Length: 305
Ligand SMILES: C[S@@+](CC[C@H](N)C(=O)[O-])C[C@H]1O[C@@H](n2cnc3c(N)ncnc32)[C@H](O)[C@@H]1O
Image: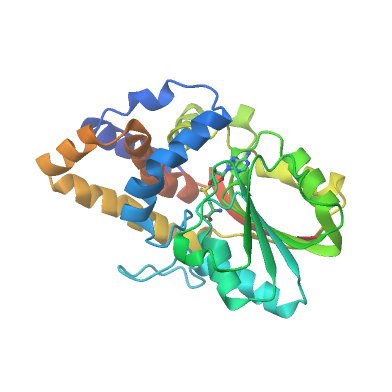
């Protein structure tokens, strides 16, 4: 553990010498407008240009945990979700925090008879994907009033519920809209310790990741089990995915180090890009450290109503 803490500090000093990211500490709370603006600014410049051409906005995963440069690991989540869809006779599927609609487009293309609905504060769908059976709702997933009770077979949420500071409300709403026996799948990151038990260095690690991603606060994984129980969900599977993501997270860190090796060109680029994009370098860089030291965890939950 000591070794990981030293590494975090060393990496902090290294990155802070390269760019001044102090501005990420400016805000203590993020409103929905802040989150919307963040995604508006980062949608093309960050996620499409540096991440996925298709518009996926989540981390790379692979079952063997191996990272090979140039290989596509962005369809891991949708392939797993597609397997679940194929195993069940679903008719209505709902995605919470659907972003640019890339997940639904992938699934709708493969499941033309299923109706997909996505809700997001700032939803979009590429023109080429508008022919599929996809409906977008612009709104907050804490309130699913546009969706009838007991009408949905399957709800999934990929790296989006981390934005919520009222997850119990989401579990309650998902329980309301799901049919009996319906499934709820979540891929997300959490804090592995209660906030008030973090050491100074752990607090630094957690803050660096939260602030750059415009998250109010990473939630302690222990709380999630309470929401699951309180809202009468049965846990089919709960998996800590550390071994499936860690090498991919280090690949992001190494990519950033490589960019800085470009010297003045990258420094000028950093001066020109919006602060939302620049700030994102910070969590992308430090995610590897925080997961390696078991300060943050990335979980797959498969739940049933
Ligand atoms: C990291 S992106 C993930 C997008 C998508 N799930 C994917 O895998 O590509 C997080 C998304 O959550 C959305 N979001 C955050 N808070 C939300 C809320 N309260 N209601 C609806 N969407 C929200 C953001 O607008 C953003 O599109």
